[in-house]
Length: 114
Image (cartoon, rainbow, N blue to C red; front, side, top):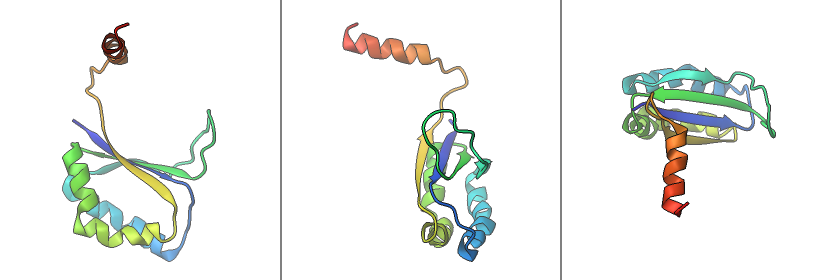
């Protein structure tokens, strides 16, 4: 099942290290089937506040996402970003194409005895 690496970059920088990171990251993702879905596009804020930028990368599964994040190639370039940009990164499992949120709500209600 598809998984995602999602980064909320709260601060931005055009430091040379960051540009080098951007130049190199795609090569670190390719062996794990990673591909950009969103890469730093300006977000239209419709609720709350959203400083910074969003990056979303898809992977074939959660194992591939974990393996990429822990890979020597990615760990080598990671400080090029983290030394200059503050942000949060999560790895998250996607849902099946036929996922139905109503079934999730029903299961939670049933577990609560409602």
